[in-house]
Amino acid sequence: MSKIKINIKKLNLFYGEKQALNNLNLEIYKNKITALIGPSGCGKSTFLRCLNRMNDLIDSINITGEVMIDGQNIYDKDVDEVSVRKRVGMVFQQPNPFPKSIYDNIAYAPLKHKIVKKGKECDELVEKSLISAGIFNEAKDILNEPGTSLSGGQQQRLCIARAIAIKPDVILMDEPTSALDPISTEKIEALMLELKKKYTIVVVTHNMQQAGRVADMTAFFHMGNLIEYNTTENIFVNPKKKKTEDYITGRFG
Ligand SMILES: Nc1ncnc2c1ncn2[C@@H]1O[C@H](COP(=O)(O)OP(=O)(O)O)[C@@H](O)[C@H]1O
Ligand SMILES: [Mg+2]
Image (cartoon, rainbow, N blue to C red; front, side, top):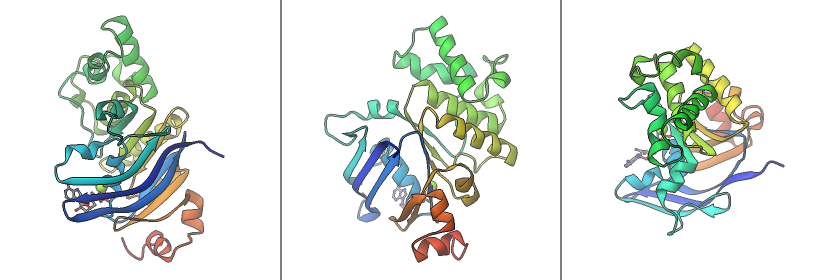
């Protein structure tokens, strides 16, 4: 049995009057890749943002239920969201490096949070993060160039390096390759398989082939409901719900 890293219980989310997530219950396993699939607007991104309290930034939102990470509900009153975001890093659809050098993109948050001291310790963290994100060789001689001077795929790996640098144990990715070409996509997918040895990864993808290639577990969402959650193989080969089967066979999108 795999260890449970995140345990979501009776999670409901409202944008104003509108309910976007409907009584979700699921267990996300440690050192696995969990894919969230489902048609546009079904709540995948909304759900992902619940896992590091990114939704706190949105007015008029109301969340009930629990998101337990390592046994602690991240919505407990005495948990502050900055500490949550240190444990749970995020990578977005559009690569979004800061308007800073490659080095500073990675060093900024660890210095700010005093995870490392300026100088050798910080240099080592930058190097280690770039290596872990599979972009060290491409970046090592241009650390002072702006992050935005890299290609799209390289920028996304820089963003992954930046996420890793704060030493999270969960990495959330919201359609991390949908803005990338096939070769960059392949590199990110290979990287994800490498990263899951150390991190728990939750990835939103609208590309079912991608879920098939990388994910151990897959959750299918529809209109704010979790319809089916199982091993990726079961979801694609042996879905239990008609709705899941209709979706994965392309009967609706
Ligand atoms: N900030 C927001 N304010 C109000 N409604 C939102 C907001 N973000 C998303 N929604 C709504 O919540 C639903 C789920 O959206 P989203 O989580 O973005 O879906 P997905 O990522 O699966 O495409 C949609 O109906 C969307 O319009
Ligand atoms: Mg989305």
